[in-house]
Image 1 (cartoon, rainbow, N blue to C red):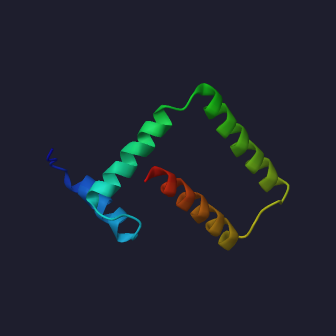
Image 2 (cartoon, rainbow, N blue to C red):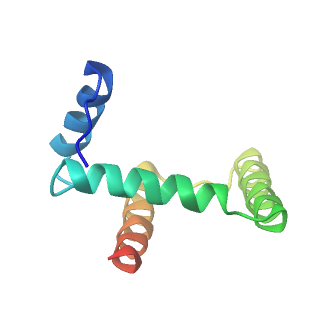
Length: 88
């Protein structure tokens, strides 16, 4: 299949490629579609559970129970790496 992309989508793909986290344009599109598919397949229960975790995080922030930015980035990167390893 060949796709003709408008300039704005091509720009987004190049932006993702420049992060170094993707092998090629196909990898960018694959991950985007897999993510969309996963989000659309979430059950109402999963959405409620995620919302509850977000709410709890907000309450923790209000109480001052925060971690610094560097630690947050490390934890998020570890979660992303773990997620990516399950998708390959």
